[in-house]
Length: 300
Image 1 (cartoon, rainbow, N blue to C red):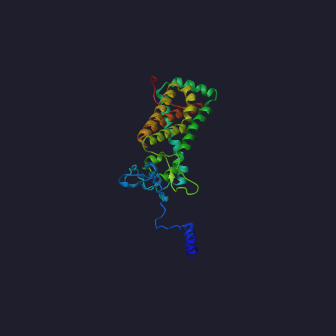
Image 2 (cartoon, rainbow, N blue to C red):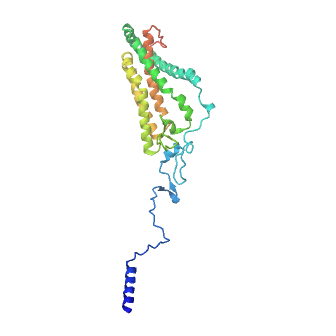
């Protein structure tokens, strides 16, 4: 009957409305969030390394063409490659170079001290030396001079290994007291050294000079008072010259880099050697070594 047919159609339509529509698939993929490119853009749209030029200089990195790199003979290879046959011989260094590091500077110091003794107030110096011998203080004077020689040897000994990893033309690379490396998982396989550019480089070199002062000032602390008893004015001049040389060393090192500091180094070293020589001369006189005068005449 028509009524039954209508009810059947209504139920069929109602069921269709209650059915959950199926999800349509789309060929369009879900948009993905792009990672931010945190690299530095150099000229020409190229990516630049985040390392400083000085870091790339000595760590073996390749700097992009658009980034200015420092002028160094080892800008690409890191630490210089030195062949084994060109490295210093350990035996030769120990038995030849090391003793020369002690004897030659000591001889220079004694020569300067002998000139002071001869051309200065010789009579007054000899009177004070007699007092030193009377109280057997020559041992203290000799011990103070030995401090200077020992410190000098210990400071120069690392040069044996420095020449095995650095060349004479390695410039500011030679200012590094230590050469570091990273350790641990995924550590970079390169060495880490001082940044030597700009104000940072000047700061590093100025502090390197300060460290050098602490390496060599023992003879000044030990010897100034002892030498000042016998040679008061010359001892003061030696200390002042040493201080001027140390300041010149620091100023030139910071401003101009490795090599320029040599002028200050020579002034400070000769002053400390002269003070060491005065100590040795006084000790020698106390032990009975004759000190002939090179000139006879008025004292200067």
